[in-house]
Length: 280
Image (cartoon, rainbow, N blue to C red):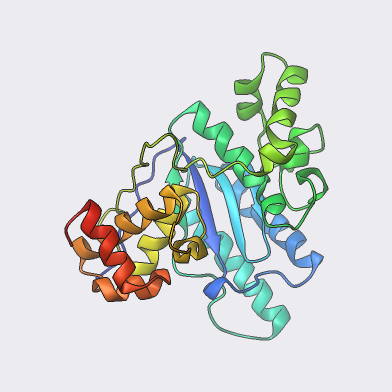
């Protein structure tokens, strides 16, 4: 089956995530991060696109991307291809650097836009890479605090939502991104107040079980390893497991035993969860 098409909408904003193949490292040195910065400038400005937030993590990328002349798919394919060629030449290796297609979720409200920017810039803190977002050099966080923004980064839209003037907006952004409560903030896709997020298959259907799992983890604001948690998992984990199992069944991507194996939980536990909430 061919890959599902992505629809291009001029002016649309997407939260894009691109991971290293098998979650392997995609940066070796600080120069590699700087090289991706330079490539992002060339690709995004060339396509008249802008990033409202970004963060380069050791094994994956986050970009809050607004498209204009070119589609998100084309821009990300170009950026990933250029960086792959750069790194493979430096490593003197071949092979796939990034893991399958990128994941993207459209941003449909001001609230979501602010939450996504916050979530992206706090990634290094949640991962234990930095004590605070302002000391991590490979994101747009410091640009929001008054630092120099790369030409391909735009802070005005998010700050305009947060305050009537720049000083008030920066202060509001700082409150959102500082302190232990900020670092604990979940993904804007997250599971809140018993409301399940909507996880729709891409146009053309799910391509693989891994794609389903990745989408549900993003939607519920959890990590893949959380799906293997113990006998009393959080509500979000249970809901994500059910959604993954249902999507896999509907798309014929594997048996219930295959799903359980991919989630890292027992077949019996997953069967019991489904028996309580749905019919396999």
